Image: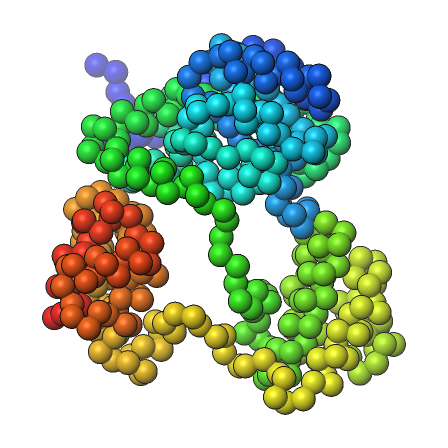
Length: 412
């Protein structure tokens, strides 16, 4: 018998072979950017069959707008098409070519608004990312699902690229095409798991709700999301933050540049905590040392001057106004009964999520539970809680699972 290697341990295991890399099945055509090419693509797509894999690339982190700078389409029998939406007034002809076919999207809420902006709206869709969440998979990104179901690796090195670049580099185009390459296969495998686990009706209800999704709700005071705003002490400092933020937002929108590239949040906070007294002091300040911020020196100075000259009555409040309940950390002092209801209801939701093998936030929105705990129905039972959840926007399947147990937790 051969003696064991002195350096080996019982826990040693051979390294797993790397997964094969997903590649394109056919050569990639040129980016479609004229009417004749688009008409030919629409004709091929309309004559093809089955659902349509669809994706869009934006320039988040580079541009103010969330417009699509590339649209990727794949359909069996037609292949993959890369379309430059900025070359056309809209893509309604493409939408007509899709007809009533189901769209397959990954993380649909990211792409639906920018697709609607160019005239593309689905009549049926399947969201592979949302389906992965309902299946409680550990990784629901596209690369994670491709590994889980297809046992292949998917490169994501250009996910944060500036897709407004023209011309787009060839490696970026291949990366973009791969995002729709296997969406049909992935959809079918995910659907089989949903059916096996009894979750397909839940998913179909979620997908139907996405058909009317137009984008996240606008915040009443978006400037309060400035990173590090808690360091701004006093209402006057908050006024400077607000004024600089609004000025930066206006400039960023006019130039279609992401706001952080015009003036970083850290610079806004520094100027708010120690406002310069005049233009020369502002020019010499650390936030103005970069060439970018200095281009708008007069605008920053005017914004600071405006904030410093406000009457006390016009200064922003120290705390953010809330349309709904206050932050839960304040409940124990402001409303101990509500704090108790929230604690019990959250525990019930966690238990139900484990029982149904779901992330708790997909079982029911945490915001809905906070709203119910803070202001429950005058008569608490499964019917009234179900009605309240319906008004808040919960799905029928969610209400069916949580209304009874949550109403009991609220009553105790």
